[in-house]
Structures are given as C-alpha cells and as structure tokens.
Amino acid sequence: MKKNTSSKGLINFLEEDIPFNKHLGIKVEKAENGFARLFLPYKPEFTGDARRPALHGGILSTLIDTCGGIAVWSCCQLEDRIATIDMRVDYLRPAPQADLLAESRVRLMGNRVGNVQTVIFARESPDKIIAEGRAVYNIRRHNAQKDQDRVSASVE
Image (cartoon, rainbow, N blue to C red; front, side, top):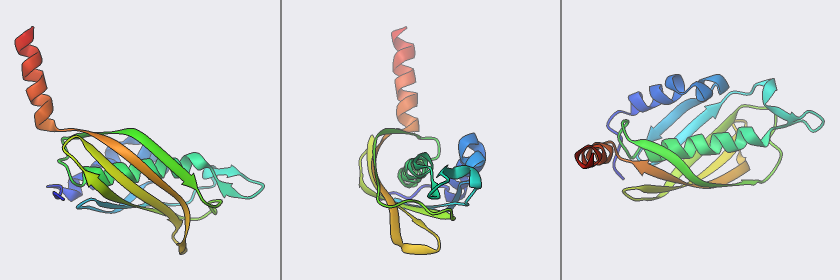
C-alpha cells in the first residue's frame, strides 16, 4: 500500500484540527501504510450504564470509525478527503471503565474506496476484544477534485 507522505501531518490534523477528536482526547499512536492504532483515555463521562458499569456504545463506534478512517488516510495524501460510506459494529462484551486502544487494518484499498477491519480492547487486556468493526470509506483524491472543479468551471 502507498504510504502517506506526511504521517506527522496526518496525526497532527486528526488530533488537533478535528474538534470532536480533540474533545474526546483521541491520540494517534501509529498511522502508516494501511494500519492505525488510536488511544482513547478513559473519562467518567464516557460511561453509558453506570449500573454495570460500562462505556457507552457510541464511544466504541466513534473509535472504530475514526481509527478506520485514519488507516485509509494513511494510504492517501493529507489533502485527500475520506468519508464513511458504511460501518458495522459488533459489541462483544461490555467495555470496562478503562483506557482503550483501537487497531485498524486496511483489507482492500482502491482508488475511490477503502475497506477496513478494526478491533477495540482495553489497554490493560489486549487479549480481550471488546468490539470489532468493518467499514467502507469513500476517498476523494485531491487531484480528482481539482479536475472536477476544472470540468465544472468549463461547463458554466
């Protein structure tokens, strides 16, 4: 797979320039060549059911979506645009009130679509998968957008 030309730029963009990621505290531990590992530090506000206690499923699906998108983006240029087309999450066990890691691997990378598989586990228990997901991402290449803009401008 093609490596992103600026892994540091991608990491900085995802941690600092996407407000939702920054709000959650998502940190990129690794993003290269179709693989991404994200760290999400535990916050009490992430608890969905305090009686269990367990983290909210929305936190897990967000982590799966974000990690999968970064894995695809690691095969692209920072200027390319990545958007989720479809995503499936299997919740395998309640998520403990603990720091989480997500790991995504690109399974198929095309020119316009990337297919990714992701697993989530607690940092303290890497052998116990909490949730897994599969997602498909649309890729809008930066150069393709310029070409489309030129065609649109010439039609007008």
